Image: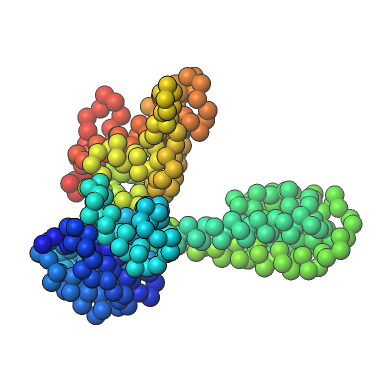
Length: 399
């Protein structure tokens, strides 16, 4: 007998409902997110039939242990996005929402639908890169928030100094703020002493930074209320940003080192626009296995680069961006396409042609990104490095 087991995954526990071919409920119970309980559940469900298909609404997080156990026991596992489960549950009787109902909906959808994608865990390197790149994204957001708070605070009492530097790019300017961030303090210190102090701290362009800071201080002689507290806050924020930047640099090196161990990295980074970080994010988003994508068109659709039709009645040829797509993959292909304009004449020529056709900058970049999906797909399929038109393909030694 064939059995479909739907699992509504949670943090501390999951609810599992198993049904047969007719949709009759064979099992419904809650289990802890614990290896022993999950192993017992797998054995219990397998005892109900000879052919079991599992389905879940989470592909990581609290469901990671369950997914690993199912794969270790050789079980077939399908993925149904939570959004799909939410909309499908409206078609079932009752307005209430419970874990048991959600699990039953997941099982029934797995029974009826044949377009669900199997859930793969990915290789070890890709799993590490997924965690590392997610951590990097969090740290980068912390850095952006800290810089925004720093600029907002500095703007309240010393707007000339706030406008003098790009604090997201100048490490020397951040170093300056850790000790000197008031007009009267900078004037008392003077340009020569300020330059010597910055140079002692290892700051680059110490002369230019000191000159710009003193020029800003000479334009303001009024002490704004709250300057003392603001200077303390700015110094603390500047130190925080410098610490975050050091952490980012170390994490970038770790990601590049780990990505180099994956067999696809050499092929991916041979394509203009792809560096170690974007290659790592691509591997993290795909699990390092293109087997889950039937072709390049499917990869483009998942990345949100394939427009979907929106025809109705006599209106045809109307397209829009899909509402459901992997934003990580879209970011990877968009940034890689944008970066390739500097190093690839082919990419630049294609982009310029789209601009001449009347497309906006963003639209032209998206068109280029879609075109490059086909190229990257073929490269990974054939395990061949990128070669400009007219040149022979190169097979990496690792292949």
